[in-house]
Image 1: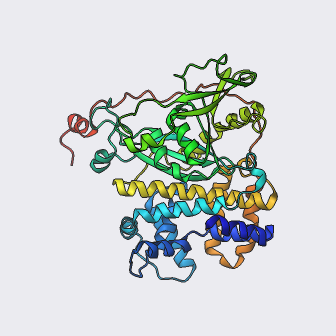
Image 2: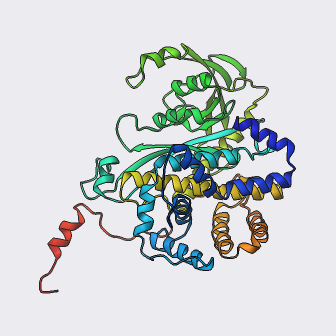
Length: 463
């Protein structure tokens, strides 16, 4: 239904109307909060920190350079003063309690809404053979060292108790055309059903119908290739390092290009017999091997395993270029963890940690939405624009818009132009050695909890 509405909007609206509609819908998500709360049956009282205000403050908090709650409350006080509203208490107690009251499903659905809005604005020339491509990859996050977080997301087993941080594993689906995160899943770092492939299976239904999933060699297993065949999408990944590939066998369709059959292995312990019986006894997989001529690259030869079997429609040259751009997902993760400071989360309970994660992802999608709006206006691809510049410009311009609402149109136009003017260089052959120039501090690693250390070295005679 959403796809039909989007296609109708594309046919009936001009490009300028589409840009204005997209900016109005995507960059003002707080109006969607009330609808989601009604859909969830979440009731709330009319107060200063009602859900729309709280979500707005939470998102602005993760987008700011200083992620503290105190700065967020100070920003809210400045906004109320500029608009002639009453002054509220400057402490963070009411704001923190308001965040705790909000249901987790609100943030999950708001993230899905931002992804749908951005997907509906994708241009045809941003796609790969007219098909949407999504890149999957995983990463880890640390969080505040509290008893609640340690119980839900334990630290690594190799670390002594009290000397590590709770750790979480995440997997995300990123749009190849826009960089928007379509879906995510997370779990504890170790244990049953906590691997990247297990997390991917939980969000596999979010992959676009007739889309292409781009992944690294960890995902090139029979189970995911079979799931792609039965799920209505295609998988392109580097061949698994444990699989022996012989190009002298199979059905040859070109030089170092063949189609082979992957036989169904025995049922693993994590899979139900019913799901196992639904999978085919074999899957047709295409193997493609090509050389990397660029000097300085660590990998000299790459072998791909995919379900794209038509060699004439998908030649090796285009597939190699497609897989080379898989590295862009690492840049998207870097934007989340480094530029948005998501690598170490601040909240002290698992529920608030999950809300904080979703707010980071929502804020990330809103920055991407501003880049898409600028790309539509100035005919650039969103991946050619600087994410860091867009995030900085969005933060500064929104601060002015909140205080000077009578010049909103001029501010939006200048914001779109500012984002479009800062583009990243197109350097496909660039390579950098993995070395560090600045040496880290020579402090010893913690091997015992900090509190006993404090008691051990404490001196007496001081008040």
